[in-house]
Image (tube, rainbow, N blue to C red; front, side, top):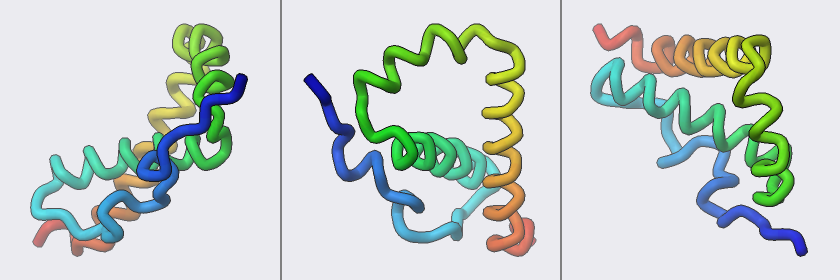
Length: 84
């Protein structure tokens, strides 16, 4: 049986804005956006959990995930004028 993720996990930009008070908040938002992107691509919780043992221990998969977070953070930093 399929278990869909809750709607709040499928939001593209949690909170509806890229503006954050601090770089640390921006980093957390970048991680959330990356996670939500994966949830939008694969909204079935069972399928996500089934694949986790494969990618969670694969260095290339982890590096790729870190790259996505870095790209999201770069976008958020620019939107916040690099917190100047």
